[in-house]
Amino acid sequence: MMLTIYADQITRRLTYTMSLIFEDRNIEYQLLNDVKSFKDAPLPKLAYSEDRVFDEDATLYPSTILFEEEIISHLVDKTEWNGEEILSIDGIPDVIGSIFYVISLYDDFTNEETDEHDRNIGSKSLLYKMKWLNKLVVERWSELFISFIETQNACTLNPKEIPFNIIPSFDIDNVYAYRLKKGWRKYMSIAKDLLKYDKFRLKERKEVLAGFKKDPYDTYEIIEGIANSGFDVKVFWLLGEYSTYDRNVDYENENHRRLISEVNEYADVGLHPSYQSNKSRVVLRDEKARIEDILGEEISSTRQHFLKVKLPYTFEDLEKVGFTDDYSLGYADQIGFRAGIARPFTWFNLKENRPSKLRLHPISYMDGTLNEYMELNVEEAIKVVKNLKKEVRIYGGNFVALWHNETIGNNGKWKNWSRVLEETLKKD
Image (tube, rainbow, N blue to C red; front, side, top):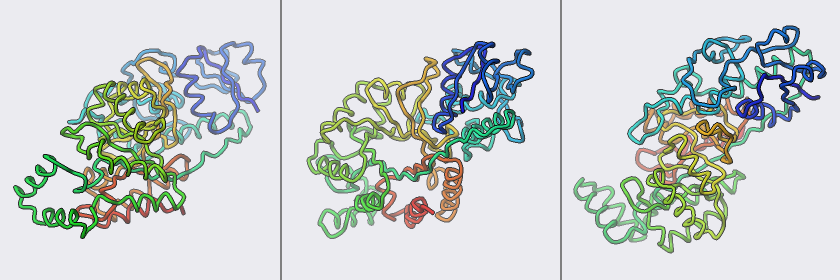
C-alpha cells in the first residue's frame, strides 16, 4: 500500500522528516507537489497544505518551518492536537513540524545559554520546560500522525514495530587510578594526596602498586562479563594529550595499548575525543589516527569527552574527519531524550540545511547525571532508570546507558551503584 503525500514544495527538511517517520516503520510513501497527480492517486493520501483545493482530502495545515532554508527564531508553544500535546509553531499546530523541530535540535541551535564547558543545558531546554524530556515525543508524534492518516483514509498502514535494545556503554577517561602512572604525574598525584592528608588513598595506592590490591578503576572483567552475557557493549577510549580535562595514562604506554586491544576483542571500541579536540579538527584527526594505529583497523564511532557538543561544529568536525557514528547525544545535567528519540538517526545540519553523513545514537542517561548532577540515591536512580527503560520499550529504540570504568566498581561515592547498572541490564 503506497501512501501519497502532497506538499506545495518538496524540500530537504520535508523529505528528511518523512524519511524519519516512515522508513524504519516500513511504510511505503511518495511525496508529490503536483496537484493533478495527487488527486489522481489512490488512497491513502494526505495533503500537507493550506490550499482550499484540498478541502475534500485528508489535510494538515503546515507551519513554515519545513519550507525554510535558514535558522529562524520561531514562536514555539505547547498545544493539543487530536488529544495529544504537540508544538504550535508561530501559532500553527503542526505535528510534522514538531517532529522536525525536536529531531533537528532546533532549540539547542538557537539557545545561546551554555554551561562552563560551553554545553547546552538540559534544564534550559524546551523539552525540559515542556516536561517532555523523559518522553520519546518524536516517536509518540510519529505514531499520532500515522494514526491520523489511517483514520482519515479508513485504512491500516501496518507500521513495523521499532525494536527495543539495551546497549551498555563505557567511557575510559582514566584507565587506572594508580597503575601505569609514571614520572611527574605519579609524584604530583602522591603530593596531592599528602597535601589533603588523604590517608585512605595513600594506603590504597601503596597496596595497589605493591600488588596486594586491585586498582579500583580496573573493572574490565565486569565489562567483559556484560559483553559475554550477549550485550552489544560500546567502549570509548580517551587518548588525548595530557591537559586539565584530559588525564588518561600516556597513550604510548605499551601496557595501556595492550589493554585497549584486549577490550576490543569483546567490545566495540571507539574514540573518546579529548576536551581539546572539540576546538581543533587537527587534534581530532590525530586522535583518530592514534586509536586506529593501536587497533590496526578503521574506527568510525565516537563519544565526546564531557558530552561536550557545540552545535554544529562538533558534529561537522566528526563528519569531516571520517567518523560515521556518534554516541554523545544527551545532556550532562539531565537524563532523558535530547532529540525525543532513542533509535539512531541521521543528523540534520541546520546551518547548511542538509542531512549529514553522521548518524547519532542518543543516550538515555549518564551515571554522573544521576549521582552528581541530580544527586539521586541508589533507590531513586533505579526508579528513574526503570521509567526511562519502560518508555523505550513501549516506543522502540536503543536504551543506551553511559557509564565509566571507575563508576562500576562500588568504590567511594559509587558504592552500591552496581545495582543501578544491574537494573539497566535487566531484559524483562
